[in-house]
Amino acid sequence: MKNLKYFLPVLFATVLVTSCTKVIDLKLGNDTGKLVIEANITNINGPQSITLSQNVPFTSTNVYPPVSGATVTVSDDKGNTYPFTETQSGTYSIKHLQAIFGSTYTMKVTTGGKTYTAVSTMPQPVILDSISSKTDDFSKKSDVRNITVHLQDPAGVPNQYRFVLYDNGVQIKAVFAFDDEFTDGRYLNFDLLQNETDIHPGDMVTVEMQCIDRPVYTYWFTLSQQLRNGPGGGVTPSNPPTNITPATLGYFSAHTTQRITLLVK
Image 1 (cartoon, one colour):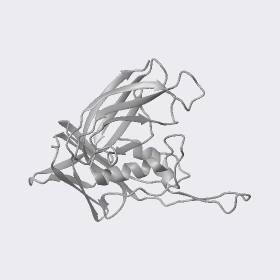
Image 2 (cartoon, rainbow, N blue to C red; image 1 turned 60 degrees about the vertical axis):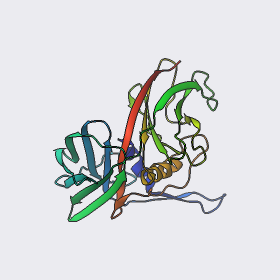
Image 3 (cartoon, rainbow, N blue to C red; image 1 turned 30 degrees about the vertical axis):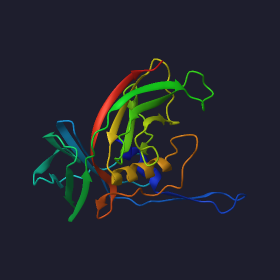
Image 4 (spheres, one colour; image 1 turned 90 degrees about the horizontal axis):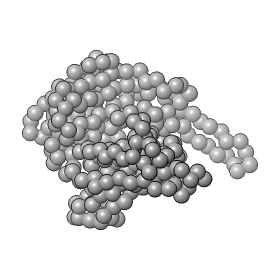
């Protein structure tokens, strides 16, 4: 999951508009050196990785110094502990781990004399039925397409979803997070609206659907509101709420995952 590295510089910008007729004064945050944790474990049996890095000032390039020498573990509610080994600078991995839906997992990271913890419960999986493409009504180009995902939301169960969109193998940086607060039990059609990349007929598009718990959904939904995914715009940037204690940048997510690929027409 590389989304976070693209987004962090934006999160420290504060925009102050003194008057509609005066110059906009950009107060760009220069906070640097804060720990960034990107941690995901899934229901797919195989390697799992957690990355540690440091944030950089808004004015810097997207090069994030890795954090080495940390102790990283994940434990489950059955009493099992899984040590993650540093396989390359700032990346901590385990060769085989398959998270189980309904189970609660605790991540522990010790670095720089501090210990950071986070808890995530893997939700029940929901099946992604299909994905489709259609003409982008907001584009002046007739050959630009939007992607729609289709799924049946289970009734009587709170569900939260995150979608990751790839165009010709390249991840689109926009964030897509939805819940079923007003659509419980319905057949859902989510449009993955974004203004970063034009998707054309002949492109190979892949959508990954993640079923995520509520704290992780809050993180991604807040981030999506700040990054102006669609034509409606966003809100003033700030740090999204994390499920990590003590609070730092990033998140820990235990989620189910599945992918569908489509040749765009």
